[in-house]
Length: 181
Image 1 (cartoon, rainbow, N blue to C red):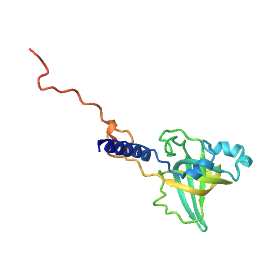
Image 2: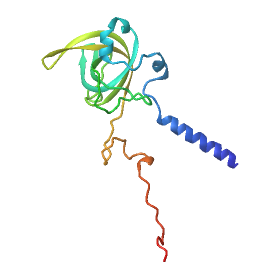
Image 3: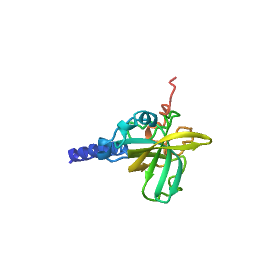
């Protein structure tokens, strides 16, 4: 009986660990998509990447609903190796647009939210940022994962609240009679 409980405990532990490492994009799209690409790199060799499935992510800048769908402007950030979530650092390598055939609510797809997209490189589009022209890579959406917003931990490190069990520092050893006389 105790052996069964031990096996069940180990199985539960392994399952919970693997669930914490879940990816935002399906296995099929992850396997066939080109990863670790930046918009600038795609623009430099556009004809090579046109029509190919890529995996990119970042932070939403703006959501625009048009007559025939939605266009989301994203500032690209590197994706985490463990979850495909955009990293929280300051580094970025350009912007890209994601084209959807359906309506996407700008309240849900609001500025500042993290997004990961598996999309097909479809086009280049020139738009203006302030008074300057900027060339965007346009992805036709195949699959999107909109990440939950991170809450700031009171200590300043971005965790979902409450922090994980391993964050708490060890407590000092306590003994009822620490000194012997």
